[in-house]
Amino acid sequence: MTTPILDATDVHKSYGRSPALAGVSLAVSPGELFGLLGPNGAGKTTLLSILSGLTNADRGAVSLFGKTFDSSHRDLRRAVGLATQDLAIYPELTARENLTFFGKLYGMRGGDLAKRVDEMLAAVALTDRGNDRAGTFSGGMKRRLNLAVSVVHRPQLLLLDEPTTGVDPQSRNHIFEQVKALNAAGLTVIYTSHYMEEVQSLCPRIAILDAGRVMACDTRTNLLKSLDAIARVHLSAVPPGLVERIAVLPGVKHCTPTADGLELTATDVAPVLPKLIAICTELGAEPTALNIDQPNLERVFLHLTGRGLRD
Ligand SMILES: Nc1ncnc2c1ncn2[C@@H]1O[C@H](COP(=O)(O)OP(=O)(O)OP(=O)(O)O)[C@@H](O)[C@H]1O
Image (tube, rainbow, N blue to C red):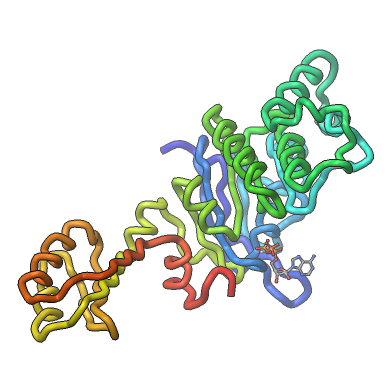
């Protein structure tokens, strides 16, 4: 098995008496685009602060690149890029100056730095605005620059804390594309968000964090497989015997009548539908509307915690 690029075991962190992390364990392999999904206050920022060496855990162990890690390991910290939720860029500097400044902080100089700055401006579609002050940028452009700044020094692990906060759809797409491109080029990425759509579409493996604990950590496929699809069928009538016949169709787990039709659960609804329609036709019940609720991470979260992600 490959050595994990990041291995956290039983990490605890409290602010005063309130625990922000209450025993978090997770491992991320080289090359992964790993999602960390959790509502506001789940502990995502606290975890990223520990993983980037900004703060230390109260208890537990973290290893990065196979070595024990804490904030005193300056060499390991240089191999991590962090795009913070609060923007790290300087509004009075231009985009180019911001990138150059952060590159220099990491010891980059001369032609290599100049080339990298150009590359980063192009990657986040800010080449045309490179000489404009960051303070004049839209929220989305600032986020894109914040992302570029976090990788200018070519880290091996990138930590993204809610990277689409306050951005327009166009910038959001730029950020998604850039994250995917960085990952495809070999960068390991931990992507934190409370937007389940983002994590679900970007990340093949995901940890769900709530109240400082990992509630589940698995592949996206396995997380979604843990729930059934729900089909709601509206019918012109619900003849006697219909629900009972549908309930025993192969693949159907439950079937119950509703005010205007029926509702069924199945791991896979598609193979059930033709048989359902045939039975409805035979019994004289015309389907008038069909709604299929496929499993998603919002429902997985609800199932695990009893609450919605945005409660
Ligand atoms: N500096 C701090 N002082 C006191 N409490 C804090 C501090 N930072 C975080 N907390 C608390 O720790 C818990 C976890 O916060 P954290 O910011 O890590 O969560 P999060 O999942 O990143 O949420 P968000 O997306 O809203 O930032 C919360 O209850 C928060 O109020």
